Structures are given as structure tokens and as C-alpha cells.
Image (cartoon, rainbow, N blue to C red; front, side, top):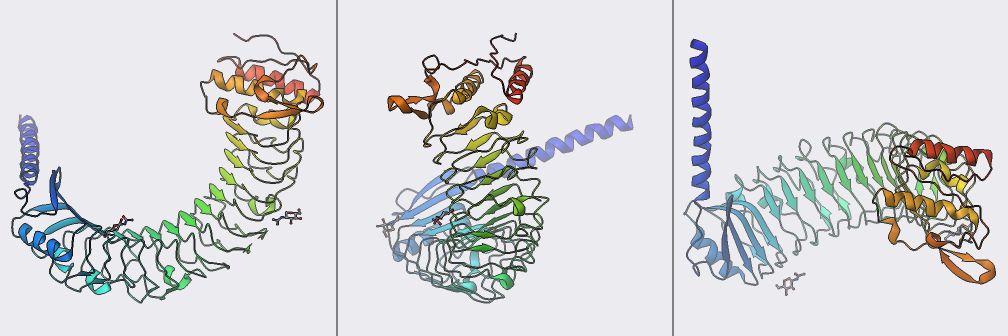
Length: 491
Ligand SMILES: *[C@@H]1O[C@H](CO)[C@@H](O)[C@H](O)[C@H]1NC(C)=O
Ligand SMILES: *[C@@H]1O[C@H](CO)[C@@H](O)[C@H](O)[C@H]1NC(C)=O
């Protein structure tokens, strides 16, 4: 009996709690915009969580006036967006008496943020976007009381250096983006105060010439670090010391030439490494030491690499996605990709200088789903090279190669047909052609005139149940080096 009663009370409490929450939500939902015109030229709409106020193409005085009208009404301003204004200075106390949760001041020529301009909204503000303005330094005094801030966006300003303790006080900050400024110097203590919470830092599009190691080393919790589009020409062992939780590192579009031994060795949790668009021509065999257990995405496209860096890649047994597009690879050693059978699903070798594919290069890559060989110098792609991966591939791109029409290319048509069975039409749209030498004309690989070419026609369907078996047959035929007609249908 007592148990039943308790059970009942639990329910009563439960419903009471729900009702309470609803009532709370209702009062929050009762937000009302001021009468039309009162805050003109700003406009107001009611959103689920509060008001959404927008002021565009106006000036400082109109904004100050509009803010004055909103004061003291216990409104929740969920979004305050000030865009494309003439607001060179954000004056002290401009938001006094307002409860603003997300503040955007974008493209408004703002160069001065007075010390007392933001402190009054510090208890509520969770997002601050001051992108595309004229800030030449971080207005630390104005920011220091934003104790609830989660996201700070200072993209597209004119910040040239990050001084010591530039972000002090922002101890809840999780995302800081400083993309496209002119930052060339970062003080060793610039990020002091951010060490406990900062998860993402974007320093891309700046003027860095080396990794600001000492400044970054305290960012214990950092997961994503973007430094793409800088002028970093050298990285060395120890540069990433301290970033032990880093999951993703972006160094694309810098000026790197070499990847020295152990340079990433402190990043044992790294999952994704982007190094495309540098000038890398030398990769030490120990360059990726430390990344063995977690690296899955490696982008090395648009560099000056001459061979697949087999020795360096060797230990990366979790690697799924390897992008080597636009390099200067002319030859793939037979064992270049040995050992990745269970992990690699994506291999991009487009825009290289590859002339031949040796027999066993894709052997055992039994997880490969995407293979891009577009824009190389391949004249032949024999079936026995492709056979080990035809079963798993969903995308094969071989356009823009000087392919010669020969019976060996039948695999493509058959593979494509099987893909069609699987209802995948992405590949059907690509027009892959070969040249019939003596006719001086091109044929689509999908409509090779096999009869005219006197090919022994291979035809096989991978049915829903017979797939494994039919593939085994093909594999036997290829291994034996004989051409077998598999005309049987597997039901
Ligand atoms: C920035 O704001 C000005 C008005 O102050 C406007 O003319 C211009 O188009 C805006 N620029 C962008 C990129 O939105
Ligand atoms: C590509 O490699 C070849 C030799 O393998 C070399 O002659 C050529 O200069 C290289 N191209 C570039 C852009 O480095």
C-alpha cells in the first residue's frame, strides 16, 4: 500500500514538474515585440526562445536609440543582429538593462569596443560575433566579463597580433575563430584562461610563419586546430607538444616543404590531418610516428610528392581516407599500399603522372569503396589489377586518361552494370572514353564494340544471392590467367 502511494506521489510530482516547466516556458514564450515603429529602423520578430532583433544599414545614434526603447522591459533578446551599419565605436553601457543571448555586430566598420560596452550583458551572452569589422586588436577589457560565452567569432578583422592574456576571463569559451585577420605574432600567454574549455581554434587565413607552439601548448582540451592559409614554411618535432586531445589539425595551404621525423608525435589522438596545398616533397619515414592508433583521414593533395610515401604510412593501420591528388607521382610500387586491406576506403590519386599500374597494387585492399585515378597517363587498366577491388568499389573514376580501347577494359562495363543493379547512378553519369587506335576515334567504355574488337565477351551478374560465388569465379579466372566466359546466371 505504502508503495502504491509512493508511486502515486512520484507521478504527481512528475506531472507537477512538467506543468511547472510548461508554465516557465509559457512565460518565456510571452515575449512581445515593441509596437511597430518604436525601434525603427530596427525590426523585431518573436522566436521560440525570445526576440530576434535586426538593425541594418543604419548608424550609431539610431542603434543607441533603439536599444534605449528596449530597456527595462524584461525582454529576452535571443538574437540581436547589427549588420552593415556605421558603428565605428561600440560605446559604454549601450546594452545596459538588456538581456541578450546571441549578439552579432557584423560588417559595421567597428574598430573600438569600449570597456563598459559588453560587461552588462556578460551574465547572459553565450555567442558573440564581431566578424568583418576593423578591429586591430582583441578588445580584451570589453570581453573580460563575458563569463558565459561559448562562441567568439572575430573573423575578417585586422588583428595583427594576439597580446598576452587577450582572452582572459573567457573561461567558458569553447570555440574561438580568428579566420582572415593579419595575425603574425601570438604572445606565449595569448590564450591564458582558455585552457580548460577551448575545443576549437581557427587561426586560418593569417600571417603566421611558424607554429605558435608555446601559446598553444596550454590548450589541453583543444580538439580542432585550423591553421590553413598561413605562411608556415617549417614544422619541427615538439611543435604540437601539449595538444594531447587534438582530433583534427589543418595545415593546408601553407608553405611546408618537409615533414620531418616525429613532428606529430604528441598528437596521439589525432584523427584527421590536412596538409594539402603545400610544397611538400620530402616526407621522413618517421613523419607520422605517434599517429598510428587514431589517424583515419590524411590529405596530402596539391603537393610535390613523387612516390606514395609507403614507409611513412606503414604504421597507420587505421587509415581510411588517403588523398594524394595533384602530386607528381608517376609510379606506384607493388607494395605501396600493402597492409591497408582492412582500413582504406577512399584513395584519391587523381591529377598525377601515373603511367602504369602493376599487377598487385590493389591486392588485398578489400575495403576500398572509392578509387580516383582521373587525369593520369594511364593507357591500360587491366582487369587483373582491378579485380581485387571490383567487389567493394562504389566509385571508380578513370576519366581523362589516354586509355586505349582493348578487351581488358571490359571490367569497367561489367562493374558499372553491377553498380546499376545496386541502384547507384552517380557513376553512370561519368563519360569515360578510350581511343580505338586504328579508327582514330573514341568510344565510351560503356559501349565498347566488343564484337568488332573480337573480344572474348565476359559477362557476369552479381545477383543478390550469387554475388560472392560469381566473384569467386571471376577471381579464379583472373588468377589462372585465362579468359573464362561466365554466362551462367545465379539465381
Ligand atoms: C557592408 O556594409 C555596407 C554598408 O555599410 C554595404 O554597402 C556592403 O555591401 C556590406 N558588405 C557586405 C560584404 O555585406
Ligand atoms: C615531376 O617529377 C619529374 C621526375 O619524376 C620531374 O622531372 C618534374 O620536374 C617534376 N615536376 C614538378 C612540378 O616538380
